[in-house]
Each structure stands twice: as structure tokens, then as C-alpha cells.
Length: 125
Image: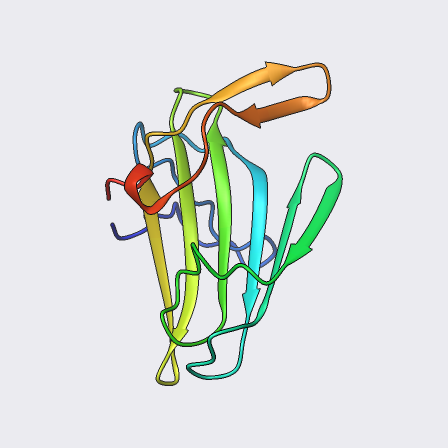
């Protein structure tokens, strides 16, 4: 779906709104970076969550079918929604997409963790 922002401020940019409830208070829970050469079968996948970094060569979940991609998993303070902001590159274009998911988060002493595994099937937008 098309991301919706509030008004732009030259010092801060524009706040991304929750696609589920329109709330302003979105938290970055997980960030994934996908790097690969054009149409390459392999590349680098970096995931950062809860103060930990993991790296591997698994490109499943890359929002770009051909190049680099970035996924930011967001939780909302105002509703239970978990959404994913995707930034991808395709043929010189930089595309931005916001997806609602079927994911939910559970509280823990050290922050949040996903209750189930992220898969393409979990994305409904």
C-alpha cells in the first residue's frame, strides 16, 4: 500500500503513519538489509534486532527481485499492528512500499520479539 505521511518538516522530515490505525507512534523493531549484484543468485543479508546483528546469504524476503533491498519492521503504540516498510531498487527506480502483516509482537524483558516467523505468506498488503 502507499505509505502515508503527516506534514513535512525541514528539520525532521515527515512522520510515517500506521497503515492500520493512522497513529504516529511507530517503533523500529527489526531492520533487514539485502545486498547483491544485479540479478545475482547470492548476496549478503544483514538483520538487526534487539541489539544483535546476524549475517547470512539468505536473500529470501528481499523486497527487490533483482537488486538491493531494505525492510524495516514497525510496531505501533496505538494498535497491535506490525507493518513492514520496504525500500527496493529496480531498473534505476527506488520504490517504497508499506505492508501490513499478520505478525504480532510479544513483550519481553529486553524488548519485543516476533511470535511467528516472517514469510511471504505473512504479508497481506
